[in-house]
Length: 253
Image 1 (spheres, rainbow, N blue to C red):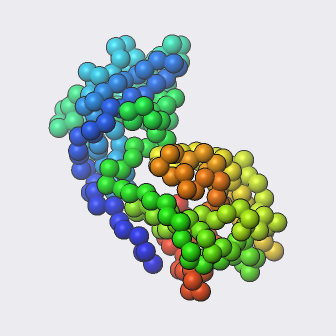
Image 2: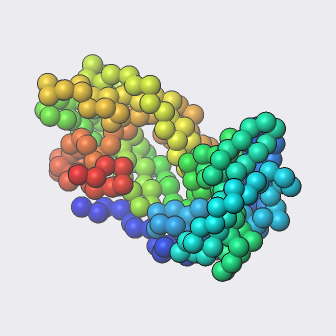
């Protein structure tokens, strides 16, 4: 079942980024640009490609490794900043339409910013919407016959390319069936999770199927402190009708 809109961008689509983009490593700004490109390496979201001219002098170190890629020829680069070295942290294109652009590995940098707001995991897709709306629809969540939550006042989170997520007040959740987890994840639209839970059923422990953001991004404050479950792995009934478990990149059968 696909109850959500698909992303409209295609692989290798390229668009100018209208936002200032920066990244830092070891307390130093590695690049600061208003001329970045969005490049869609796969449809759900793009990556930033940065003009080499806007990269700080001396931080890129050529590793002497040339790569023939679908988008052109690139040379692999290390990052060296204030005593910190990150091998294979970037590649710089030397020919083709991306000549003069660098593509950085996201985790090689300490933090990325769009304007002055930190962004996590990957760039925000300019074609995506994320809306959190309070509802009076009736939601029931269970797994293997174990009731997990039930509410008549959920917040529904609609995100382009993903199934609707149902965020529920903690008083509506059966925490006796949940076990806290140390897992932390991040989302470019919502921020970092502050809580994760696994679910205990008679059949065993199902890891990391529920989460919460105590301090989400400003645009998504309606979900602050609420609990959501992965539709892909639990059974959700909406207004008395069971929902089919969706197939997403988070969980593939």
